Image (cartoon, rainbow, N blue to C red; front, side, top):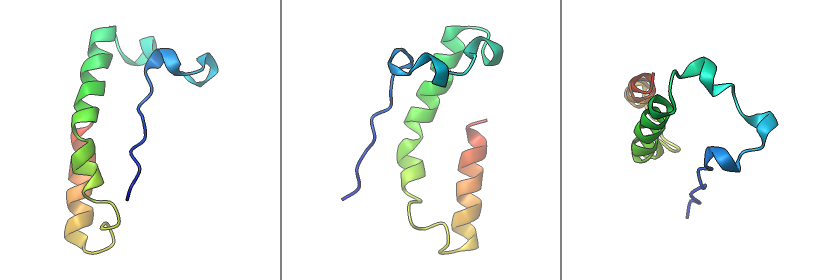
Length: 70
């Protein structure tokens, strides 16, 4: 059975391990929106676990999913 890892809140991450988020996002709200989008996509990503090498179609579908995050 696979283990689901807890996604840490920003306040739980050591200061030296944080990005300079203000250089990436103009507001906290924009960051939160992208974070929620990524969290919602977790089930789609986990569907590919152990299957990327099964076919070129799987790899292409994964790459398209990954592209949707950016």
